[in-house]
Amino acid sequence: MSRSGGTRVRAAVAVVALFVLSACTVTPPPPLVPSTPGMTVVPKEKVNEVVVGVDDVRGGYNPHTLAGQSTVTTALASLLLPSTFRTDADGTPRLDRSLLLSAEVTKAEPYTVTYTIRRDASWSDSAPIAAEDFVFLWQRMREEPGVVNPAGYRLISDIASREGGKVVEVVFEQPYPGWRSLFANLLPAHLLKDAPGGWQAALSDSFPATAGPFAVRTLDQPRGEIILERNDRYWEQPTALDRVVLRRAAHHDIVEALKTGDDQAALIRADAIAVKDVEDLAAGKPLTTAVVPRPEVVEVLARPAAPQMADVRVRQAVFGLLNRDELIALGSRNGPSAKLRADAQVLPPSKPGYQPTVQSVATPPAQLLTEAGYANQNGQWVRDGKQLTLTIAAPAGIEPYVTIASRVQRQLSLSGIAGRVLTTPPNQLFGRDLSGTATSGAEVVDIAVVPRVDTGDSSAALASAFGCRTSSGEGGTPIPGNLSGFCDQAVQGAIDEALTGRALLSDTLAKVEPVLWQQAVSMPLFQVADLLVVLPEAQNVTAGAPFAGPLSGAPTWRREGR
Image 1 (cartoon, rainbow, N blue to C red):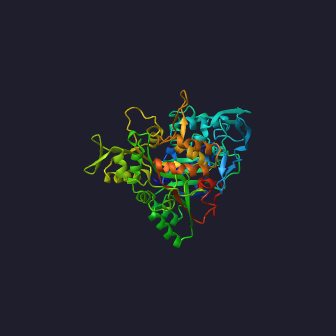
Image 2 (tube, rainbow, N blue to C red; image 1 turned 30 degrees about the vertical axis):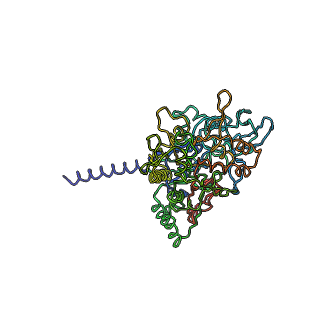
Image 3 (tube, rainbow, N blue to C red; image 1 turned 90 degrees about the horizontal axis):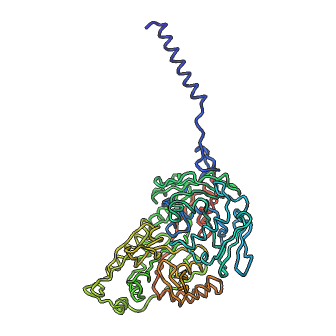
């Protein structure tokens, strides 16, 4: 090739390179588009965030169902859903003025509470928060199985809407002093009431709309990460942080992430090993820790609704054969929960007014089973030629319930009672198997290892866990209204008096607790607690108000140096 030809080639290449370079320089990259309306995407290098290590981010985020109870559900509900009242540091309910202008009893007969909603309070899709959201939650809590503490909602007879849905009048059949515990974590009725799957699918893996200081940027269950970013459509004070990240990891990996500063906080159900790892970390790195009790007590239910457990002597014998201390040690894994032993039927150990009331049945289990018609043959309890065999249920994949159920089966088998552990999806267990709505031919659950939840009004928790309902049929026959299928008219009057304020809860518990222990329906074990670990760069991160969780304070969190 001639020199002139080579020159022309080099010039052409230079022109092409210049054109490509100019094109890259002139054409900017496409802008990032927020995945949620009203949410600002912040470039990564400028993000002001706090990363929190957690045990899991699995789905089932409906805070009103027993199946959805978890640390992450409590966290997301506190930041994404509106509530009429929030819990103060001393445990008392406080009007949430980011949602309501007022809420008060406006009529004694019939007992009526009137809520006035702020005009600017709306869901992330711009739909107003209104009376229909109150009606939707009331109807679902009154009618659906497996919900948390429905007793207060069952007292409501009607809800009326005024002023375009911004004034809500709630009418009760009887006075209800605990009304401030109702209508927490409202749900977007306009999106959920006709959604596929109905109530059982509500918030199963996402939030169709939110109304809080944060919005969902990413909810990635397979990767174990949830990213919440400041909601710029929120009508109140904006958050100090750009975003909060919840990141799933094993306890050892979370401790390592705290050591390197990749995580600035952690909220885990720690076992003894994790507690020791955190203590070792604290020896070389400044940090603070706190035990955060959840509103969740692990209990073993012996269900009177099951034919084999209908006889109180059989229930008493079963509980007498269980090693409660071993179950508590196993389930708590000698972590923070081990110090929250639940020795009362109703109040959780961390709640003011809690007093141990535990009682044991004096009659030996062998004598009780004999009186119930069983005989010990070659180490097995047999009646009518059949060994006593019990089905022990627990929500699949949820700890410590599955582990405890397996140990219950083992303990009983060593005493001559056969057992089978049944683990089913939580929605199915609480919504069908334990609700009396199981289809014909479904396996009857004799014993269940499940959570008992106190959402604020302990009178409602008592009525929901051990109270009767009135049937809709002629005559209004009392029927069981709880997971165990327990309904005892001897204590129902006292339960109703506490619920409607005609008696003090403390006086009612003094009467009812001894009966509940003797009836051997529930064996409470311990209250579930998380361990909160916070590095100095995560500021204003505290344990939060009782049962609200640390994430409830995330709107005021700050990141040092960002």
